[in-house]
Image (tube, rainbow, N blue to C red; front, side, top):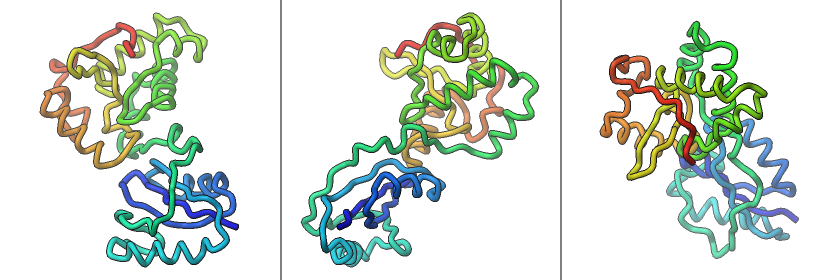
Length: 222
């Protein structure tokens, strides 16, 4: 018996497929899908999975992109799906080659600063929120908290890390120019909002005038 799954990628497109081993299949897809996996919905195991899969493909044919990929799934053929409890996207983000080259050729991006940046990206939350505290960074990297604060100041000064305010809450986000965790359409919305709020000018972070960049060394409040 097999189950039916519906995978959503970073662009919001969906793949309808079937498998006996959802964890193994998800691991394969995480490697194969360049935009990352946002969510996975699964059915119960069923004897006629191949028939149901074809029915789902046919029911959503108006939205077919190619093969098993669809721009949206609107008809679930009365099959009960639930979101998988597998940790799908926690460790998956989009990165951009031109931004990686900028970082690699920046003489300041070495040693502890580079390690702090990589750890921040490794713990990024959806929509680029940074929730890990500086004291935790210091513990993980086995360095002084003062060195973490120094690295954060440099990263904010270069607009790799952005200090943002939403209502009365202040926090940090990774500049979407350098990477993104979440849906691609949300990345574009985030860029538009940041430009509107005059947090940063897109598309290139390095275009922001130095005078417009504030630096902070306080701990992450989340």
